[in-house]
Image (cartoon, rainbow, N blue to C red; front, side, top):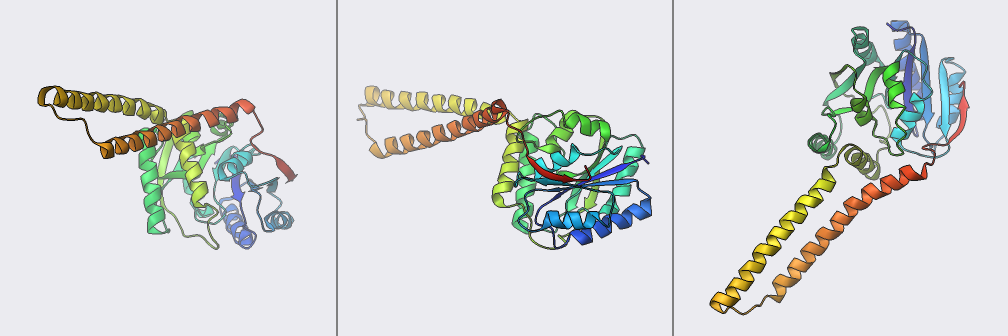
Length: 308
């Protein structure tokens, strides 16, 4: 086992159940005899989450607190936490105890065996059918589209060695997709199957809008297929237009069929106009991300810290 353990926990509106989170972590710390550093990153919570972090820091001396100036999103919060870690082994867990600290010793054992990353593979989710289906569909689409092998059903829950984290932090992307970056940096990695618990309390901070953003970050950051699809659609459109032109002209010249079909023309114009707008949207998404990177704004603003 490494000399020092760091655990990163992004916090969002978690004041009501943060004590339970800390009790679970501290119980496992005592069982495993960890030299622990716990980095709690308040991602612009609307409740008193950071006040709760300050309160708990008086009881648990190993807490480091980071308060972001606004809600920057889960991935940015996790990345900020990773940048404040000093441990030899580093873990990422959520604040809702869906990925309980009691799982970590088993995950750390893989690092002791020589692996650099042990990431969780969710066997069963305690979530609605629609949400489970959406996650399953996204991971399978991303796997087919991505230029990088991103394991199916693997989230941010993982443990890593310090050298992996140091290499991940070299990425200065403004819209990071951390599980993709983790896969991209390489090293020796292994998936560990586990059954994910239900939330301890409250509602998930992942709204549909946030989930869609993460999905788009994954696709557009690790795949060039959307651009290539536009080219393929262009060739199909050209082939269709050529074939339809031959059909119309040959019918007129050989059989004297008059050129008609206002309805057909209107449908074709509507179809291809919609297709053009979709293609422009795909191109625009890449352009916006290039624009974000070129502006070179800081990816996060830290309002204040505790024990850092």
